[in-house]
Every structure is written in structure tokens, then in C-alpha cells.
Amino acid sequence: MAASVCRVGSTVGRVLAKARSPILLSLRRGQASVNFAQCLLGAPETHVTSLDNGLRVASEDTGHGTCTVGLWISAGSRYESEKNNGAGFFLEHMAFKGTKKYPQTALEQQVESMGAHLSAYTSREHTAYYMKTLSKDLPKAVELLSEVVQSCSLSEADIEQQRGVVLRELEEVEGNLQEVCLDLLHATAFQGTPLGQSVLGPSSSARSLTRQDLVDYINSHYKAPRMVLAAAGGVSHEELVGLAKSHFSGVSFEYEGDAVPVLSPCRFTGSEIRMRDDALPLAHIAIAVEGASATSPDIVPLMVANAIIGSYDLTYGGGKHLSSRLARLAVEDNLCHSFQAFHSSYSDTGLLGIHFVSDKHNIDDMMHWSQNAWMNLCTTVTESDVARGRNALKASLIGQLNGTTPICDDIGRHILNYGRRIPLAEWNSRIDVSPNAVLLSEQFDFMFTDVYIHPFVGCDSQNGARRLLQVHLRQVSGCGGCWPRGAATGLQQDAQRHVLAPLLKPSAGCSRSALQPYPSFLQVNT
Image (tube, rainbow, N blue to C red; front, side):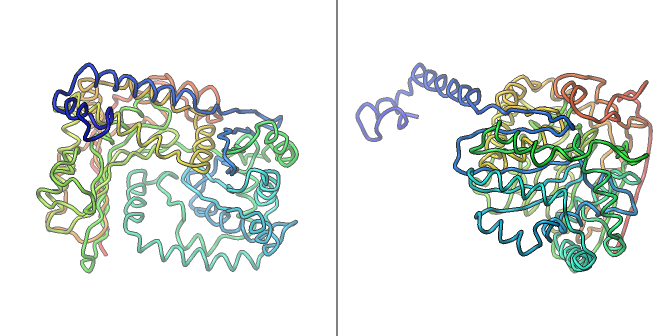
């Protein structure tokens, strides 16, 4: 502390180091907190404009010499059927195979001549096509994105070529055990619903998808009201709106017949799935309960709770002095190689869980202490724990927005989820007013009456982790689309006011407290 006030080694510095004046330290802490709040309030504003066809244009001028611009679309594996599961991921590959105006070679030359980076991704509820380039090349970037999204060639030869690429990627993904484990987690948690489908889709679907399937997918989902043109960096909002009118005014907002995409309600099912392979040296395990939706008032407390549990890896320093209690136990008892608390939120539900990697002899112990970490949130969480979690969450949210591409992605997803961009200053305020230790304990005590689910991949212990399911076997019944606790505040009001998702409205007579016994086990051994 003294070194930050006076030069290290000076006489005054040594005196301050010995005395540690509380008045001086409190003054410096106050100054830092004011500067932090002022910094957040001084962040660039996000401007949003809607075109006549419903397409929304959002931008944030950060003053950089570069910018990221892209299209975010309400389309993903949750909107797919069992027949066309993987169509969105397949289209992501086809987007870079050329358009009617720019064949593949010409498209690649255009991007390379700008020194730009063109990319895309598909998730369960969103699809994005974006480009990072110099600010002066914004008009050309918007034109190329317009061509990629609206005029993809979809030639039969390219489809067959990309079919082989997709099948190879599916084989490669099988080697990523963490991704396989989390896909299995969704598959068993939301079994029988579209949210349980993987983003990549099964290999059988990749082999059977036709050009007409891809065309139908585009016609059903790539509509103006489901799109957001977002940009961040050295961009002018007026210029971006003009470019959007030039290149996207022709995007249709009408659907043919009954082709309107429906966000199917999901159903959380407590269950277990295993893929046993004794040849693997380690086990990848995920346990989870039903979490909060992206627009739920419970989302911030859950994010704070995740920060309290934290993460751990063998490469971390600190050892027994780590702030996370579960991390300290992992170090002292050699429980696992790594763990990560996570919360995956979707339009009307979510998953709160822990993923860890361990050898087969420590699975039971790690399962026990992972449950114990959750139970501590219901019983022994302290004010200092909550304060630490809040600060860690704030640092994480700010650190994630390091660069024009993360900012642009944040803008696109927020507009689709909430109808507006939630600024960091508002997140900071929401975190500061999140529940204290007592209220957080009550909230988690209520939440953990829901069922635990725990798929895991890898080597198996003799007892597995079945004790967990023998204790907690209750789930929310008949609550597809209801808001947790029946509340409709803050983020929910934004979604209800702006987002075109009628199925997200609370179901009539639906109660979060409607709990019924629902034992369900699913086990797969290989």
C-alpha cells in the first residue's frame, strides 16, 4: 500500500509502511472506487436504430482504428428439428464458399486485400457472421457480409465438398472430451426437446442434408426482425445505418405459410448418462441443476455464486492460499486436475453446474466436495465470500470486453436477448445490489430442491457418483417458459418489451414451486 503512495525505499515510505495510516488508505480506496465508477459511466454509448423491415442496427464508437462488424441472427440448433439438426452449422461452412457476385476465389481475395478477418459461429440460439477490418473499410465489409448472408451460392459441388469437411470435424470433436461432456449434459438435461440437440448435429444428419434443406432453413430464419447488424470500433452510427439501408433493406420480414420459427419450450429432466472408456486416463464429469434464463432476475446472483466457487487448474499458482474453498481442497487432497463452475443461460432456462477433470480414484471425493461447495452457498456463505464474488464477476465482465470483436459480439447478443445493450455501469449496479450472504443462501436453498444431473465421460469408478441422485430427485414440472419466482423485473421487462419471443411469456397458472418426484436414469457404457 505504502509503495503506491510514496517512492519505495524513501523515509516517508518506510514510515507509512510501518504505520499504515487508516485515513490515508481509506482516501486512496475512495479515490479508486470513484474512478472505477466514472470509467464505467464514461464508456461509449451504444446506439440502436430499427429499419423499416425490422432489422436492428447497433453500434458503439470506441475510437479505434479498426472495427468489427457482423450480423447476429436468432437461429441455432434449438430452432432445428431432428431431421435438419446441424443445418445452421453446415450453412456456416457454406458461407465462405462464395456468393453469386463473388465466387470463392474472389471473396477470399477481397478479404485478404483488406487485411480483414472473416469468421462465423453457431450456438444453440444464435448464429453470427462477422468481420474485423480497418475502420476505413467498413463499407466494403458490410457489402461482403450482405453477400455472404443473402446470396450464398449453395452449389451442389460445394455442398458435397463441405459435407466431407463437416464429417471430419465431427470426428475431431469426439476427441475434445470437455465439449463432448457438455453436449451430453444438454442432451440428458433437456432430452426430448430441441435444446438437447448438439450444435454440430449427428453424422447421419450431415450425410442426409440437401440443398433444399439449407434453402428452407435460410428462408425460415434469415428474416430482418431476427437480425442485428452490430459494429464496434471506429465506426459512425449514421454511416452504419446508411450502409444497412443500402444492403439489407431488401431482406424480407414476411414468412411463407406456417414457416414461422417457434422457440419450442424445453423440459428439464433429472438424469444421468455415462460413456465409459477404461483406456482413458482421466474422467471428464459435469454436474448441473436447472439454472436461470438470460432475462431472469436470478441471473446476477447465479453469476456471483459461480465466481465464489471459481475455477482451478494444476498450472495455477497460490496453492493452499487460493480464495476458492473448493480450489484449496483440490490442491490439498489432489482431488482433480481442473474444475470450472459455469452457468449456461438461454431464453427461458439455463444450466448451473461444475465441470471437472479427475482420475478415477478421486471421482467420488470430487463429487462430494462439489456438492458441498453448492450446499455451502445455502448454509455457510459469508459476506466476504459475496464481496469477493462480486469483485471477481466485475473483473471478468470487464476483461471479456477487451477488443472490438468481443464488444461487437456482446452488442449483438444483447440486442437479440434484451432488445438493448446493457452497459457495464448497469451491470455494476446490478451486481452491487445482488443478494447479501443471507439472501443468497435462501435463494440457493430454494434452487437446490431441483434435481441434479451429472453426465460424465471417461474412466468410471466402481460406485460412480450415484449417491448424488439418490438424495435429490425433484424437478420443476410443467414450467416450460415460466419466469423463475414469477418475477418480471429488470432484464425480463426488457425482453418482454423488445424481443419477438411470445413463448417466453409466463405460462398461465404456472408456478415455480410445483415440484414433483421424477426419478430418471440414463446410462450409456462403451
